[in-house]
Length: 234
Image (cartoon, rainbow, N blue to C red; front, side, top):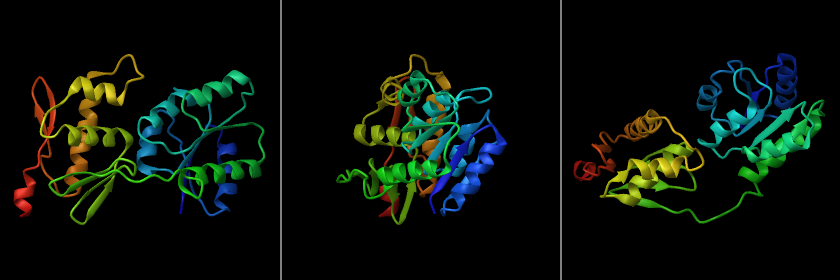
């Protein structure tokens, strides 16, 4: 069952959308904590997001940019703003479509179906999967998947970018500056701890598929992939 996440601070509109969309067989979750939208995104791992622009704390443009650092899932803006520039801003910040309020519930369903078909269905772009492999560890960049033995795990976009860099550079070091540029080349400033947090997430993903100490910190330089587990497996 495909999952839809609704980020709408008007509870009546959110519930109306949820009730109608569920009739078509989708699993729908409405976000209620608008200061920590990404926490809900990580937990739900939605196939599509319906996103309002006018939200408490941070607007929908901000949250769409945050989603785009982690996922390429379709994002449809739903807003009372009808100006041309608002729609341009929505698309420029990573949105895939735009619906103005008041809206027809059937139009919402049609656009949801259209975006899901483009992203995952018969209209999705088909391409041959690349595979990066070291010592039995396999990484599929197009799928955002990491596999080892009989276990496979999904990665966020940032996690996948880090794993790809580590595997491409192996056995050399992937420098911190190169990683920051690869992950956030459109941002003028990134907090020093942001990369550390993402490296920690990558290490946990390796642990989940049974690999301990997979990412070595090279002080003053960056990070290096460890493949010593190959000997343990043999």
